[in-house]
Length: 299
Image (cartoon, one colour):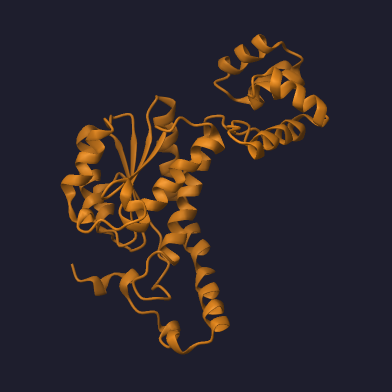
């Protein structure tokens, strides 16, 4: 395929004299171009919604969300997957990121890895992909062989397949049940898709993982009540969340945080319903983790 046909590889007419500009003018120009990204993402919200619904279905039947990409796209997938663990107290297997060349490719480019369809298939085999999972292939160009190979294998297994590209009529779209194509236009620095394309991908991945987690009860109001308190900052954030959810004092939040074995959801339910720890735990289990459902059932 001729790369010149790809929007992501074309030259940006607004930046033809990039190397002659002052630092502040370069920054202004980059900022102006970045403003186009959210508008481009918004046009794809109906497709993003379909992916979220697919992921929700996967989670509800014990499946997983698997991001697959190369280079910047792969790194962004791994980043989003890693951040789901502390934010939503998600099991590390729940959202996973695969990158062409393996984890070492996070910091050092692994030459040729992205050109292999077989590697995409092998990496999914290694994590024991099933038909309960959703696989999201990410490629700014929309033509990465590693991603296509992964999507082809995922289809054979019966997993739901989705794609995220930054070009129209992307090749990976042909291999996915649901396709997202965010057109951000030519990059400030020709072909450097870690810029606008990378920003667009980050926004979309944030939307997919966050909305999916909300849909399975990981959020109460706008609070991350399933946060995993793995350090001092997150312990204090947990107590703050309890206070914001219940309007209690710091002392009460601290007391119930410890009584609930550092479980923020459990502490909130105990405070708002006056249920015992065991009763609150049972009600949460019965409501599949939705705090609001427990609270409203007690009113």
